[in-house]
Length: 522
Image 1 (cartoon, rainbow, N blue to C red):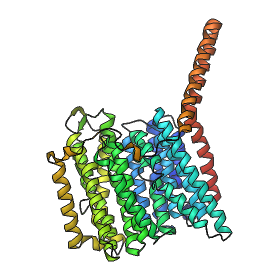
Image 2 (cartoon, rainbow, N blue to C red):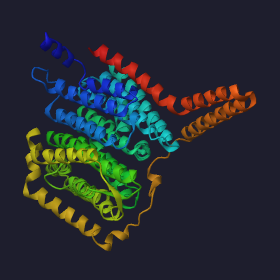
Image 3 (cartoon, rainbow, N blue to C red):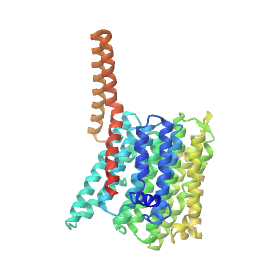
Image 4 (cartoon, rainbow, N blue to C red):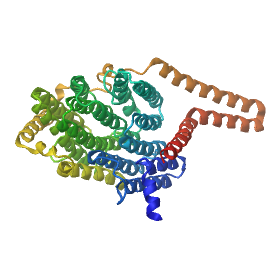
């Protein structure tokens, strides 16, 4: 009977224990209890996905990506132990579970549902940053994701009627979700405005699910090669001049998404396996970079003892052969060469070297000169070590996931990558790096600005809260002692509605939606 129950539970969408764990963690007021619920949900999710007798709902590379999602969730829980952020952790767990469910979905309807759950959870992660800029960025994030969902729904409706334009709507929706230009600004604003804990979760899920969906639905679309290469080059330019590490990393994310989209456009089995391998590697090394950057930012830019080695490992993981970031890019590059597009491989190698230099080496050189008085916490170190070991495992043994991976370790790609990394290191380790003068918000024009109505809505919302505050205070002063209690209650209610009530209200809505989805799929 126990075995039958386990198999019935395994029939539910993959990742559902994480969905429920995230909801329970968000409603739990004790941080340690919320984290423990998250750990239990993560372990239960992994067990149900890969236990003996469970149906194989994911292909090997997709299963590896789902495992990488779980590792991000684990690292996020560890990191949050030192940086309390209840809402970001809860929404991050929900996003993790929905991302796993989206990977297993084989229908457009299922894809739309789960990507919308990811969108709501991700917007909540952004807004949990707590600043007006974070709320604005979260609303813009939600705006673009809802627009993409509407386009996807139109595509589904047209597809059911046999309309030839259905594919165009689906393609446009997925490109928005993958942060393709010119609608990539939502990602730049959101990742930079979220809390350090939130950035760990944001870097992993929404865009990778969109990339996998593009690989399934539009492989071999020639226009995607050009779009991806343009995206890779366009987004890497600001990394040369941006001084804010997390914003710089966000531009690097867009650049690497461009490399994946170019591989999808090529569409050969070799290239598509490279795209999936790069998606897995990027989830690991981007999360590690955001973890190091977040730990530094949380301490006012003063590097705690013990963080520098992980910063070095994070930089090396971007492109060093044998680590997470190399394998997928090398396979895509070799696929481009085999298709007669050797020049495109050179572009990808140069872009990767620039990301290695600007997102990894330069911050390591320039941002760790001011030592702090404390050490990284044991949980921060454990999270960084978990991701480092995952990157090493993927780089060393990822070849077992794909028959095409072995070409990444031929002499030519190894030599070319070694030369590119050596040149990048030479520039960054010498005064040559000063050629690229850095400032915060460099090349901001390349990030599409937030819609003016979003800014106006947030400002208006803040003014409404302030007005209710003043009304409550005035009522308290007018009515005397007993009235002050009423006034304070009004002030508290105003603040709850204008600040805390939004997050909790969205979380309750997400709770009901997720429970309905899980039950309906069951």
